[in-house]
Each structure stands twice: as structure tokens, then as C-alpha cells.
Image (cartoon, rainbow, N blue to C red; front, side, top):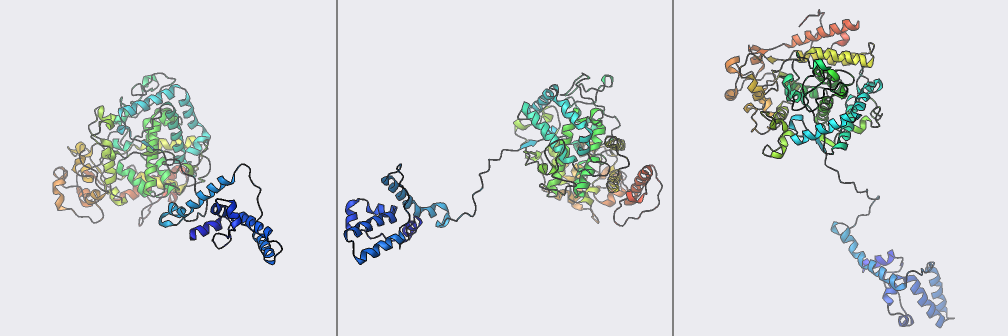
Length: 601
């Protein structure tokens, strides 16, 4: 009853919801009285009343009826010839039958909420994101497809066009920070550049993605890296043939199209996973982070100068290693964003909405790699028993899944800067010559004339001094060193336990590292004596600050030495710049600055 009355009112009926009074004459003239009343209550009632008034005209009652009809009868709309009365009745009846069910079908509980605004358009189904993998993680099929697409693109001539774009002075000034640290577009510009190259390769083979080279996995022996072997990118170039790389998947002896590479033999070591994690944790500010990652000792610029040839010049994109190197730099930025919860909008230094010349994209458009359609794989998710995902590196003779091991080490390292610094390194120090050469290249490319920001220099000097003053195990002191570090430059058994065996699962967080890596006031845990491989040769387990300082196997440097080294580097730099020393010093809290002469360390 109530639903029916509401339905009638919704159709225009203003009465009390009851069926209007019908006369006998009208009933005799129509077989579907109820339908007529429900369908067209006003018009039908008007006709009935008019008929009754015609037969009994002249009475006072008839005049009152006609007056009431005139007041309540709405204007009649013209009859549509295309629709008969019977069809209209059927449609309206169907609507009335469905009205009581509307609330039940629309929402739980029998009520239909009234929308405040039109519904949002349905979003298209999000496609699966492409995954970039470490070179030693890709399968042989994936590597063949990638190298095949790169070679085809190189022979097309467009490869050189991409490289020449990087040599444009105007482009270089946007893509790299200047001496004053005014540009922060280094990371977003190269993210766009890599993605565009990836799209070009996918036009040749849609399944191709650019892998990355985690060179921290080769920190103890950079020259022996499998990435620089005939299985993948090839080694150094032939000095008798313009340093053209003739081995590897991109070997080419032609001076016109070959990749030029000149790797120095006195390369030193690479930074370790602990060094990289410290860089990500310490530099919460975006400006400081991008400056350190681009120009710090042992980081982005170091790899360019270490590889030499094309990579040591402004036309570095001619070497395919450029893209896998910058893919790793992009991955570190991706990790930094996740670590500091800044995936969407980091504290960007500059105008984030300005186009990244010569591209249309702005920095704000590429803050999220996932929104660009790709992400980075988790090596620990691979099933070792799945033959379809066996890395090509292992198929070609690799001893262990070094990528998964590196990921376990990364996740097991402590999330504390002090404990990270306390992790003893075994890898050789990076050659500082590459750091100097990179600074020279930047100065030449930017045509900088003493355009130096003291704050940026402070951070660089502090980072250089920190790397040089790290505690390191003398590699010749331990006969079992190579088996306990796996080439990562870190004592694996002290970080993940069990010597890093492949059958060990990933340990949760950094609990293991927090147990064995010394912190302030930590004491030796007697229960872990059975996990002490260094005690016989070094006299202790190398787990506390006291054991590290007193062990004959470890080169240990005090905090005072680090401060003096910082002053010495800053003094040398200030002398070159002919500026006061104090503006290039940044020491830890409580440190005192004294007049110090520059010494050779």
C-alpha cells in the first residue's frame, strides 16, 4: 500500500493514494480501468468527470466538480502517435511492479542510498608491471632477447642518436648536477631516458626489459666480475684497435660501430652492500642523497671512470653498460624512496613540474616507477627448483646464486648507521683516482668556473673520509676469507649466519645482524662461540668494538683519525679553490677543528 502510494505520487498523482472514484459509464467503456487510473490518473479522471457533468449539467454540484477539475488538472501534453495507449500501459505497469524491488536490489538492508554525485568512470584493468632483474638473475632466454634487441637497435643507427642526445651541453646541464648543486634532475632525467630506451627495445621485442648491474656483488674483485666476461658484456677493449670490445654479446671490431672500453688494472675495489645501505640511510634529504649518489666516492661517477672508453666521456650511452649501470642507480633511488616513504613526492630540490629537457615528462611525472609501468624483482621470490627460472649465470658455470645471497645480506644488515659503520669490510678500498677524474669531467662538461656549493662539498668530503677510514680485514691474514665473504667484501657468516649457504632461507629483518654486529657497549655473547671462524687466526670473533680494535687481522682507524683526515681533505680542496678552510668542514657533533697541515695518508 505505502509503496504503491509513493509510486503514484512519483508519477504525478497528488491524491491520497487511493484509486479515484470511477463512474459506471466509464467502467462500461473500458475493460482496463485500473490500468488507466494507474497510468494516467489526471487525464482519465478528467474525462470521467466531464462525461458525468455533461449528463447532469446545470446543477450546483456539477459546477463545483468542474471547478475542482480545472484546479487539479495539469496541462495535457500532445499525444504521441508512435506509441499506443496499450503499449504505454504495459510499460508503466512493468515499472510499478519493479519499484518495490528497487531498494532490495540496490543496496544491502533494503535501502538504496541516494548518490551525491555521478559515479566515477570505471578504471581500466591495471596491467602487470614489468620487472627489471639483476644481470645474474635473468635466464638465458631473457639475456638472448635483450642482447639481440640491443644489437638490432645499434645497427639501425638510432643507438647513436640516443647517445648523441646525452652529449648535448644543454641536456647535460639538466641531467647532471652542477658545482653549485642547483640541479636535482639527475635521477628523474635518467629514469625517463632509460624508460624511453626500454620502449625502443620493446618495439623490437615486447618482452625485453633493461637489467641492472649490482656491482656491489663484485666489490672484492671488480676485474673478475662475470658481468665483464665473454658471457655477458665483454671485458676491456683491444688497445691495438681503438679499445674496441671484441668479446661478449656486443663484441664488434669495427671502429665505426664498436663499443670502446678501457678498464684500468689498478681498479681497487667497489663499495659493498653495507656502504650502499649506509648511503641510503644517512641521506634522508633528497638534495644530499642525489648529490652523494651521483658524485660520491665509489658511486655513480666512479663506475664511469673505472670502465673508461665511452663510459668515461659525455658519449657514455654508446656502451650498453651505461644502461645497466644507470638501471642500478635507479634501483637505489627506488629503494631510497621505499625506505623513506617518499614514493609519490620526495622533497625535490627544484621545480618538479618543469619538463626534463628535451623530454615532455617532468620530475613529478616519474617519481613512482610503478606508475611508469615497471618495478624491480625480489630475487628471494624465485623458486630454486623451478628449472624455467634458472639464471643464465648459473647455467654458464656460476657457483652460487649470488644475487639471492646479496639480497639476504641486504635485508639482514642492521637499520642503524652506527652498526652499519661497524661492519668490518674485506674488499679493497675504491681507487680515489676515479673520484678525481669524475670531478674533472663534470667541471669540463659544465664549464664551471668556481661554481661550487660549500654544503655539497662538505658532504662529499665527509663521505670520502668515511670510506677511507673504514675498518677492514687484511685479506692476506685469513686463509678462509674467500669462502666466508663470497666475494661481497663482507663477513657473510657474521651477518646472515651459516656461511651464506644457498639452502638457508632469508632471515627476518636485521635481527641476525643486530646480534653479531657491534654496537655501543656491546659485550661478547658466549653462546655463539661455535659460530666464530676467525678466532684461531685473529684471536677473537671480531664481533665487538674491542675485539676489532685489538685484533691483528683488522686495520682500525679511530674517530679522531677520521676527523683529521676530513680536515686534511678539506684543507687541500680549500687551497685549490683559494677559499677559507672552515666552510668545507662538516664534523660529527662534539668534534673540534684545529689547525692541521695536509698530510699524505
